[in-house]
Amino acid sequence: MYVLGIESSCDETAAAIVSEKKDLLSHVVWSQQEHLAFGGVVPEIAARAHLDRIDEIVQETLDKAHLTFDDLSAISVAAGPGLIGGVIVGVMTAKSICAAKNIPFVAVNHLEGHALTARLTSDVEFPYLLLLVSGGHCQLLVVEDVGKYKMLGTTIDDSSGEAFDKVSKMLGLGYPGGPKIEKEAQKGNPKRFRFPSPMKGREGFDFSFSGLKTAVRHQIELLGDEMTEQDIADISASFQKAVLGSLLDRVKKAITLYKEKYNGKHLVVAGGVASNLALRESLTLLAKENNLQFNVAPVKLCTDNGAMIAWAGLERFRKGYTNSLDFKARPRWPLESLKKGEYLMKIIKDSEFKNTVLENSKPVVVDFFAEWCGPCRQMLPILEEISKEMGDKIDIVKMNIDEAPETPNTYQVQNIPTMILIKDGKEIDRKVGSMPKHVFEEWVNSHL
Image (cartoon, rainbow, N blue to C red):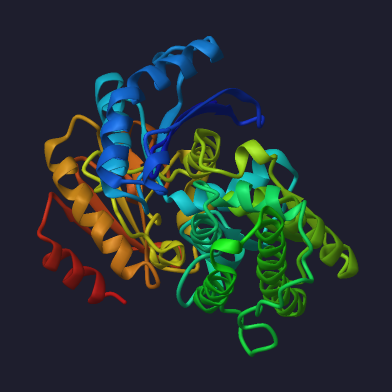
């Protein structure tokens, strides 16, 4: 099984191909340089740059893997959250290829790409505790399964990565700020300036970095034009120490809950800030103190890349999670929303019918369909929308009539689409043909 992943949610145009054996067959990343003069990413420029390069990036990825589109099992793409212009470029590219080559399409949440990367590079078992730290996000989650996340805490203002970028800009170091601050910090004295570690010692698991940024700005203003290179190094080191102090305090509290409630084995850090060496070393020690295995991806897979999207897509695809080609790109897409039925629509095979349908603890609607069936295609977006809204009550799965189980006879169908409601392993009712959303909802609710 080979899956192509496409990433274009910010300022990297990237693609990669992975196999189910965790082989990274090819990995191409083009980092846009157009934003350096502005000290940050300009969305419109980013979108145009993605459009200019994405075709050649995809082709280069195929060439390096010595594969063609015909060799792919699925194509996955970062469909949000992110800068919507760039996300649309990636999504439309993936959709076009899938439509032309009749390849399954998998829409991947960009954050889930980061969250699952450790499972590509290490043997990490569910559930695991995840610190997700990047330019746009700072979250503590328990990853219970693919598509199933328990949010423990998040930032109430800025992300840690954003704080690195803005402090770097204040110091005149440029963009991106994370690597530049880290480099300067290695030459500085982390004890010279006593910056606050926000939220440290407080209840809960949330983060905050806006006050820390303000404290750094005030110190820079106090030094004024007399600020030296050593001052910059000392500020960088002191700032980094404050950020790590806040992160470690929150993670330490989360470990206590994680071990008590989940009895898990792994602490994982992911996202662009995870490439920070000081953070890696600190979390390694913290994990060891708490008898946890610490896992983090190689630095090249911490920042945005196609491999994480390809792997997340592969994990989703082998569970039967796919999306229709009318899936909409999303500028905002909370990771924890996936548990509400975002991906409960599955394509199942005969061999999976018993576990997925007959032995399911929830009622299941089985949609018997065919790719060539017009009414089936009309029902697809309706079923996906209902799956999101009612995922806590029912599961909705799709079964191709060419792979439908021959027994029991009551599940055989003569017309498509046919939707069969199954509860406790027994057929409760069935509907034939497409129908409006409200009719479907009334039908399901009448049996719950």
